[in-house]
Length: 216
Image 1: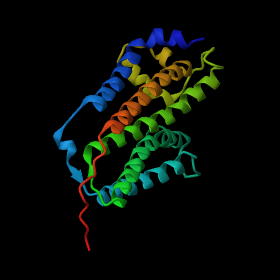
Image 2: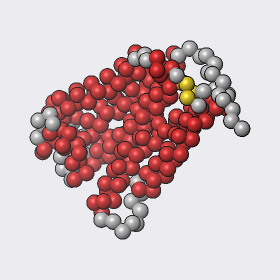
Image 3: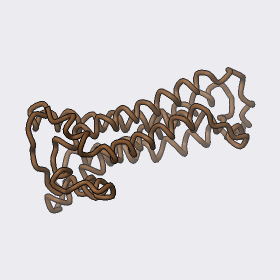
Image 4: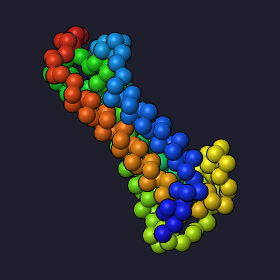
C-alpha cells in the first residue's frame, strides 16, 4: 500500500495539520474565559443561526449537483468543491447552534456563550469529518485501495499550494494516493475536536439558565 509511503513523504504537513486540531481540541477541553459565561437571548441566537444555516445549506445542495447553469465546467467544479468541502461543514454548526438555541428558548432560558461555542465546535468537527470522508472513499476507490498512483488535476491546486509550504514536491501532492491518506488524518483531527468539545459540554454542570426576557 502507498499509505505509509505517503506519510513518509508528507510527514511535516501531516504533523502540522494534526497539531492544529490537537491545539483546538485542547482549548475546547481546558480553556476557561469569564466572558464566555455571559448569556445571550435564545430567540436571537436561534434566528441568527437558523437563517444563514438554512440558506447556506440550500445553496450548497444546489451547487453540489452541478446544475445546468451557463458556466464553464471548471467554474462548476470549483462551486461543487466549495459546497461539498467548505459550505456544508459550515452549515452544520450553524444548524446545530439553532437547535441548541431552540431548546433553550422552549425552556425559557438564555444561551451561555460557552455552550454555544462548544456546540459550534462539535458541528464544525462533525461536518468537516463527514465531508472529508468523501475524499477518503473517493481517493481509495480511484487508487484501488491506495495501491496505485493516480495523477490529479486542478482540483488539488489548493492542496498542492499548502503542501509546497512544507517543501513537498508537486509530483507527490498532485496524486490522489497522497490526498486520501492525508484526509484520513483530517478526519481523525476533526473527530478529535468534536469529541473533546462534546465531552467538555457534557461535563458542564447542569444549572438552569437565566430566564429569557419576554417581549410583547
